[in-house]
Length: 337
Image 1 (tube, rainbow, N blue to C red):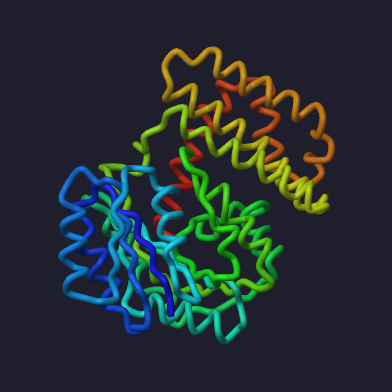
Image 2 (cartoon, helix red, strand yellow; image 1 turned 90 degrees about the horizontal axis):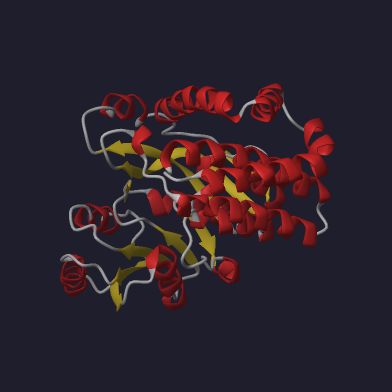
């Protein structure tokens, strides 16, 4: 059996579509755990109504603890051999669970991964989604060791590998699926550890998870100082690989941290008011890391990363201008790819 965990908070507009997509699964051996995280709207009542209609559904009501707290509550209650997380404003294809489960069993993998599609609230970008949503119906399947899968995050920054959703986890990995409460970028604290602890990870190219991008533009993502929690997660990853005695992964984690300090500076400069102390703090952290580990990091950097480090060292403001153009191009490419 699969335990599907859905944290629910202030998604009255989307929750029915999410639940419907799960109940329509071709694989029927699952329990659906809906965690009402103190939602201020009618989500709790909607979840209770569904539970009365289908005995596979359990609803857990709690005071608001945030996304991580809701996930952790669901994990404690999960009784399945496998765990899957689905965000409550997203949806999945009918064979989502079947594909993930069959690949996990076929390849004896503790984690099974699939691709995802963007769904868009407005008409602005739906043409790109339509152009991609039928690709990879017979997509290839790749297998990786746990370390190789973790490297997809630490070395390649591959988004579909970072997210908690779009995956099926064996229950043996439960101890590593605890999410940090009170933090943003929750997945950055967890997924690389889960992969690293797994013996095998299987990845399907099929795009079976629908990720809802809310708002009028992907460029308008809200940014505040809490978004810098990602830097804490990346710093933790350095310590994690150091404790594991994996100097290769530790070095790539240091590189990722250094480059994200630059991104953190750029976004703080652009979006956070009264930011002088914060910018100085990030800049000093960047300088210290470059001074101590720069030579080693430089050896594993590609040309683009070397250029970004050089430009940031000369002029963070110039780096910001270039990074803004590059970020828009990369986000558009991700949606279309």
